[in-house]
Image (cartoon, rainbow, N blue to C red; front, side):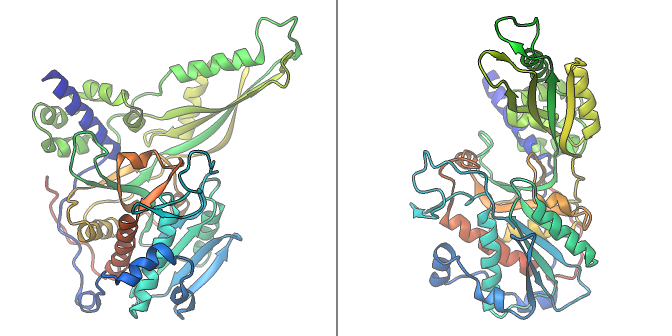
Length: 473
């Protein structure tokens, strides 16, 4: 029984990955116009073949009179799809086609081949995030072939450097702002449908990211006198910096438990679990030490309750018999929504506690605001409605916080509703392929992604506010 309780508590802790509340409510109402003109998301055999084989050109997208295509920052792309009703506020769909460097070792197929094998398409970026690039254009192409004309205008932004600096997305954001555009909502990569990712929890869960952690890349540097290794000083630049980094690794950032939606989440999730876990989650304040102790044991859930830090680069020395004058280390921080860059920087300096160590902030930004996910949040409710339509077996939709960062963070100047969701079943084995070898997407999964976007674009044509509804467990 004790072992079972431990497993259940661990399961409860894993659910906190989503910082979430559960919504199983009724969807947006579609108006008469939308019902009358809706195009069913049913594709012919030839169209399904094109999804996995053609994918090279979208002639209807590029030749339609109400679509404008622009190249931004040399390599990014912006499509403006003009709707028939200018009174409806436009929205933005995003993806990126760049990838991290791809080592060829260990691949079953060449990493940029896009070959199909055993019902899956292999290749670097098939999950992150070329699948979204192609699905967006494929869905739009299929709608246009069916003579679809949107009521609500929208944009498609395809970035070329999300994995590095995001300059393409920044330029697109600035361009839209210069044109006076304000967006109803943004949808980018981020969340998935979690399938058997949480141990012993068999229900699929749709995770919609409503925020992102902040980030800071911090350079630690020590300058000392150089010299010959035959007569070393008591301390060297490497030794001083290594000790500083060691203190930083061994000292965890403080737990931030009650911020955001966490307490509400735990209480609302309680009924999903048997006794005694349901009682523990119903009283999170009382059982906070127990809950956080279990969360600290797993790197993934530990990242939910605090700011994390990782030493990623260490540079020192040029020759075996020369004591280096300079040692440098780069530390990557992912900042909890309850903290700021400045607060984390001060904490880091206090932990290191050595005046010989210099601190240089290379890049940094604070955590993103939490986008609305209540009954009146148009973007969130449209996503939830489309999830229920395309994936009727998924009856748990949850708003969460992305631990990684996306290009969508550059659009907070244009909207308060930024959502991160990939309509794809993510299974445990898929987690290993992100930025790893043998990255792949199932053919059926890609087809479902096209279908999801196909329906989402049509659902967005509603001119009604989301209806009020009760959240139920």
